[in-house]
Length: 125
Figure 1 (cartoon, rainbow, N blue to C red):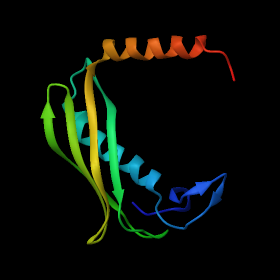
Figure 2: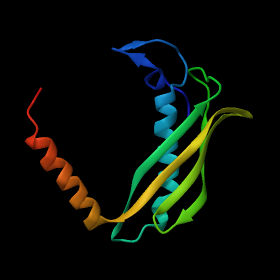
Figure 3: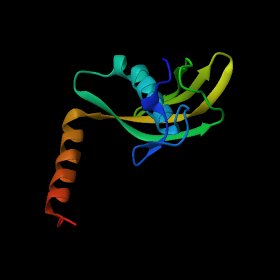
Figure 4: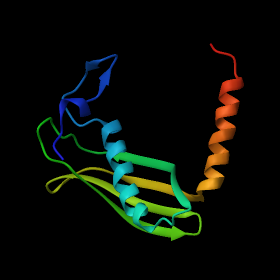
């Protein structure tokens, strides 16, 4: 993918650096890891993020090409852990780990329903 302005770090709408942001890298690493898991989910299963850690080690300026990769390094009954990396050519931009838990869709629906009921019962601030 090509780094675009909307991938730059911005606070209150002001771009602070014209480089690939850590949060964009995190988003793309989550997507790459999801692509590893998705083909292996059963019809009644869903994956949810459980952990993401990133070391952002080098910048990539707007207009450059970045390749984000995910590789499953651990699979067990609860989910999959991927090693995730971001590259600009031969330059490592970032590396980390992403964990996805696999749950039956019915269990996930109950978890979301509980969160929805909890949030709707809290007073507005």
